[in-house]
Length: 281
Image (cartoon, rainbow, N blue to C red; front, top):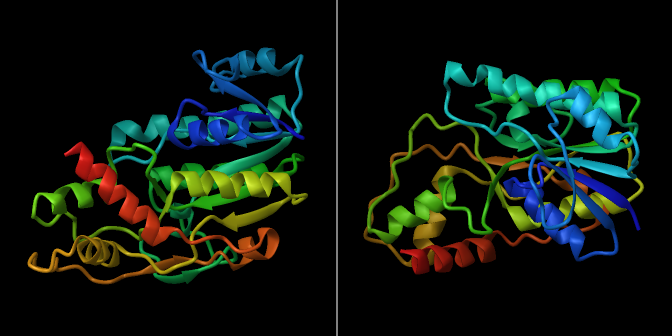
């Protein structure tokens, strides 16, 4: 049994991880600004004083760091927000010597990568968001804390009513193609519950100071996604979008070598999303 602290437990991924941990043998605590259904520690992660006070009388085996400003549209007004990601990591490293499992992003590889991508591929963060995630990785690697860095693709499912998959299914249910920008960056996705389960499996292993891609290990692209959804929904009459199949496969062979086969629920998860969104509409 481990004593685990989850940051960002009110957020999308953090909430799913905290819920899953609460049903396990582990003792889970949530670091939030507001009340949480589980054991919660109230503090502002962007404030060193607040975090230091919150953690001074308690220690954890592992901190799963999900808190952060998420990726948004290119907008100069978001620059300050993204810098908050680095401030939170800096504060964590100053206030705890616990192992940190950091939820990073595949965006650190660059916007226009294609083909198979493994963890040794050179990073090329191009957006302000990607740079903030990469800078967090560097701080963690250069620290004395044991760590795992997890490079995640886009997340979907568990009631989320936004994102490429939700919008694509919702549009196709209305018998029209989704509004997809032709210059989309590299894209891949995993269901948030599958991502959470993989993260917990890694936490339960005795693994330190490694970087992992978190994925189904299958080629994905917007082009393949939309055609696959059309196939599952038997919508042959809607013309194809003029998109290039710039597919990406986050290679998960390293992940598999540590935790065993990762079940690929890609088709099943898409079928479930179609059912859920059809009921909403």
